Length: 113
Length: 114
Image (cartoon, rainbow over all chains, first blue to last red; front, side):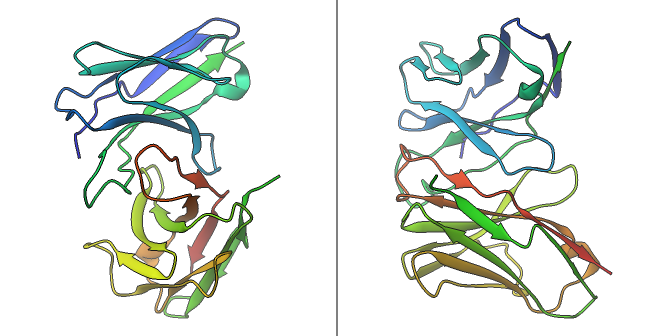
């Protein structure tokens, strides 16, 4: 699996957009970019995933650069409840290991009042 | 609401005393996973079941085993827990193992080994 690089921590003011970057410079053509978050002492929560195109759902937007070497997760209006560790994961598109989510260290996002 | 349920949420066991953690799902998903998350670390996959087919990760210790008696339930058995096995154990499910289907996680069971 391709590895990802995320900043260890970020701060965001409540009500503002939170932009979480992720580098995945060795990503292969059929590998997906997944984002999960984990609020303290809870199980990881799926946020969004994408292959090439930008994606948006009710939780967030995912912007993937044209060369696919990096992506940004955008929480448009962060709330205190969005304080969590955010994991960017590159997942194999096919083959024997495509079932696997390999979590890195993630980014601790702290939303401040 | 369809969900992944883990019981108990907190489990205390003694060093060397076998312990079983439980996971159930109402999503009717084919795949069930067990992850281990030690303090301040990321979750790490131990193994998964695709229907009745068991798939172990290469670095999962033999001390950890799993059973899946039916679609809805999956158990994690730790035969002889050591102090190093204290962790949060997370169960997850997915419809299948394709990359466009996400995994849904339960709330976890925090295991303490005395």
